[in-house]
Length: 312
Image (cartoon, rainbow, N blue to C red; front, side):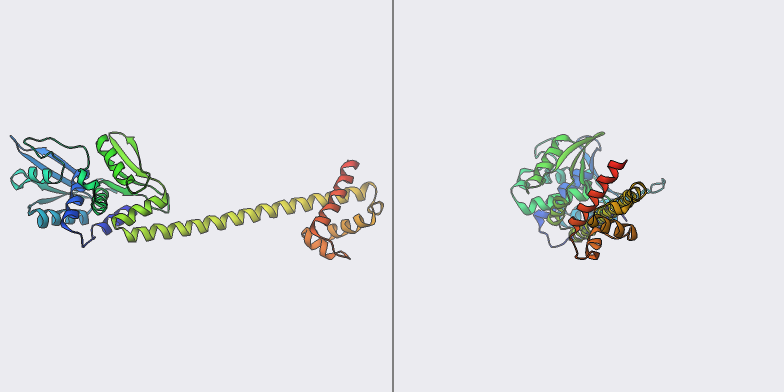
């Protein structure tokens, strides 16, 4: 099961929310995953579609307990490989579809069918209602990437005005969601792990939040280890290449003019380097009598390199 589905399953089990919160959540679910069907003169049905059984059960219970609305549920089996079945809940005209949509703020509360394209203003006036609405929006049309791969959370809508309203609702919590057009949809998205974590916490997806943070810590540790290893590898390669070059310089001097022609302090370090090609500059310095620092050894080897270059 995907990380996104696990998150929705967790949210579908959220309990202890009052009637107003349930209505706000259902409003978002229906807005994101519902469609209106005309069923005759002044009659409409509402169809709500989801790929998750847990979400279908939650919507069914909300409609039954909070609105006393009977619904029918059907399962559409997808024959294509790697595609989930979809669950379809139908609220028919005779069961109060029009009244439901007006109660949820999806249709204007006046005679006729006039859809609204914005989130009801009363939602914006209460932080708890805002969080409940965002939970419903995620259940109805949201998704989140596996944090092992990347950090991305999005809400897919089919109306630009509604996308703007949803973005404003998310950003009212100090977040920075943005909108991008994708084919015939408008996608509200977040890409920063901290902001995704904040939103998961707001809507009650605490297990998903812990999983994301745990994965983030592991990824950061892995990246730090790789960075250290790469740095050490680069330093080791640099040290080995320098040692090879130093030995070549000393052999060149030996063949051209002889090591004995060098000053005594350079002779001493030249012989040590040839005999100990794998040693670091610090280790070479400690072998001298008296010992000298790493920078002192490097200074002498630089002088040897200059002599070798002159001989070339």
